[in-house]
Length: 312
Image (cartoon, rainbow, N blue to C red):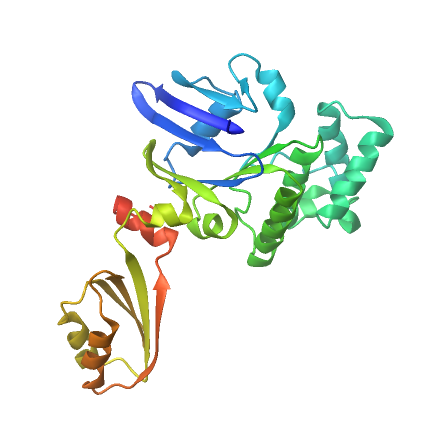
């Protein structure tokens, strides 16, 4: 049996449907992604999974425990990292973790040892006695994650944990989560940044307007939109003659974009011929410097499935 089972979840607010028959499973030790634009229903789904609100119908089972029957037992297994920072700005990092550890029932030397361990793990030992209000965005996000790990949860839910952080801090968080997962922690990662899900997660669920758009491995989700690929062309310069030659091809090309001396094509691989493209370009006034064929990204998959960007 799967570690997490979400079955036929429905929820309405003021007669407006927020979640429509949502189903998915998460295996023990997996890194699972939940992705969708703002308003997709992600936060409502997490609130249901953690027992903060009750679904109108359906069930959530975590480690063989139905949350409707014993939410307290489930919460002992859960660590939740909210999108909004749950930190006290006037306290230092060490005291924040001491406070949250006490809420989990930890005390004495056990708590102090765990706090010291986590501060070292997230790279904040040198800043432990500084007030949180002096921390950078990335430091606050790391401390926020540490607060959810004090009781050594086996299932960690993270809601947009990289909001407002710089690329270096984002990579630090990714590396930390991968190490945590390799030690046995099951992870549910919620984001509206598809590149994060693509880099971190094994499988994913895409929600839009409360309904499932796609669910499965990254390869399975990508396969839902034709056999699409991207072609990147680098030229010495891009002329109108080049663009006209490409647009004249009946060659499985569905999208053409230009970026300085590069042209990007979205193609149906079952109909596309690289040789025909090369032949068409060779008779123009531009010189081909490089050609590459790439897989379609999850972001582009979402765009094709829904007709809109995740940022909308």
